[in-house]
Each structure stands twice: as structure tokens, then as C-alpha cells.
Image 1 (cartoon, helix red, strand yellow):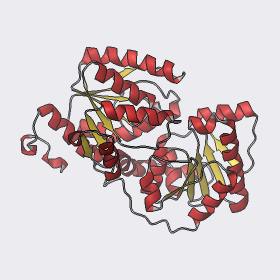
Image 2 (image 1 turned 45 degrees about the vertical axis):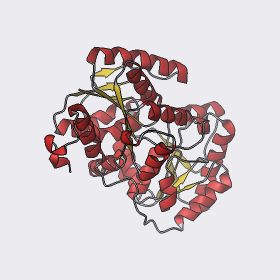
Image 3 (image 1 turned 120 degrees about the vertical axis):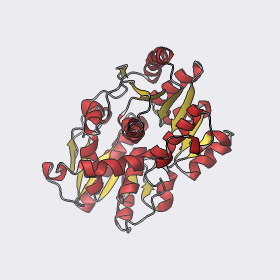
Image 4 (image 1 turned 180 degrees about the vertical axis):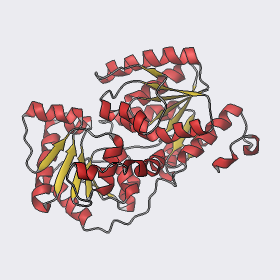
Length: 371
């Protein structure tokens, strides 16, 4: 039996192709949801929209400090894992849910598989960086999205036999879900034209909670609207909304809207002229979709996007944000997608089945159709 542990919108999105593959092959597994994200549009609606089975367990942990949230998760996850006794526990990414699932499983002797292993920003101020490093070093199966990620893991001394380059499940998710998203005309709902607007996401702790950085981003967005005359649309994250209210800020030229469900966001993202973000997943999605991206950070754990030219780092200086937007608008949006061919979930599932069956002989497994 396998356990899939998730708790945030990005995790649900990136694990959805793996869950679909488990369903297709009728594998024995269960989903454990920590409840780290608890806003309906950012979380629960995904299971409905993506036609995913409901989690067998939901801890409903909610918000809290890193220590409080992680502690509650570890306690709840350990109880369930001891009761269910899965052979392999699968976690994704760099969240507190990912860390808690990996720690709880490894502490009681269960095998851990880490989807999207080997990403590094080399910025220890980011809680996510701490999480991803720890999870990589206690995992038994490291599913690296790219060769670059594999080399990072090898450079940190992780044994080669634990590392598998599979591609990134975000490609699978985008390809599977983009057509579904077009069933609703979200552009019409918001009065937007294809290629006629910029899309914004801002949610990271180091950007939202640090006042100087947050104010720099706000001013930068206002500069961008004034200098380019593009509409700037910001589906606001609860953390950023709370911060805006606390600071009493009123934005000029930026349309702030409520958080969007994933399929609605995917449709806006695929039709935007450009995206400004501090999200790692959005950097990947825009690269896959052929939409220019300006990242509102000083570093990225997705260096592949910089190398192929789909993305540029702007930091939070207002003038730098504007300059980067102008630069990306001047580029031809044609680049190579470095994140794989959309079959990462199939490769991950095949590796997990091999591990359960304790065989390296693919012919012995009922999964030849995955090739």
C-alpha cells in the first residue's frame, strides 16, 4: 500500500497526475490531507474540479507558526501511518506538510518517496529551503525533475541509486488540466482579452511579511501598469490580503480579486501577456505554457527557467521590476520546456511498483503500457 500525503494547493495539483495513475492501475493507496491550506478556492474545490478521490483522512491543521503547524502534523500523520502501515509514503515539494510527512514516516521506519527532489535556492532564509533539504536527505526515493536536480543531489552525497530523473509532474498536470479549464470562459467573467493583461501572484513569507519588500512589490506593480498600460490582475493570497489591510494600502492600477480555483487560474495564466510571481510552481507553469515570467525574488530553485529564457529574476526593487517586465515583453516567447514530456507520473509509479515487488525486471511487472 502507498500513502500520498498532501496539504496545499500546489501539492494537490502536482500530485494529481500520480493519483490518477494510481487510480488507472487500481493500486492500493490512500490520501492523507493535513489541512495546511484550508481556503475552499485554494484547496477543497480542487478535488472536485480535477475529479480526484476525496482524502481518506484530513487533519484540518490550519494555520499557525512553523513549529506549531509542523508539530501538529507530525503527531496526526504518525498515528495514521502506524494504523495503516503503508509500504511507501509519498510527499511532494517543500511545504511543512512535505517535511512533516517525511519526518513522521522515516521516524517509524517507513520508506519515503520525494516528488520534485533536488531543488535548491541556496537561501536559508526561506523556510521552504530548509524543508526541501531535510526531506531529500531522509528520503529513500528521490524523484528529480531534471538532470540539474540530480547533479545537486549527487553533489550533496546522496547515493545515486536513490535518485531517479523523471521529469516534473507539473507538466503532466498542465497538459491534463488545461483543456478542462477552457470549459468555462474566465476571461469573459473578468472582462479580459487574451494577451491583454498581466497576472500577479505574491504569497511568500519573505515577500509579504517583510514590509520593505512588500512595499517594493506594490510600487513595482503600480509602475508596471503606468508605464505599459496593461491591466494588472492580482488574485490575492490570504496572507497578502491580510498584509494589505494591516498596512492600509490602496493600489493604483492593480485590480485585486479574490483567490481563484486552480482551473480558473490556469486559464488566466495561459492567456496572460506576462506573469509576475514569487511562486516556484508558477515559474514552471509559465515556462510550459509559453508565457513570459518575471519572478519577484532574488533567487530561484527553478534555474532551468532562467537558462531557457522563459523567466527573469527582478527582486523587489520597483525600477528593477519595471525593467524586467519591459525586457520580457521584448523577447520572442519561444523556448524549450526543460521539465519533461508529461509522463513523470507514469515513471514515478513504475519505480514505486518495482520497489514494492522487489524486482528490477520490468517484464515481471504488469505495467508495460507505461513505457
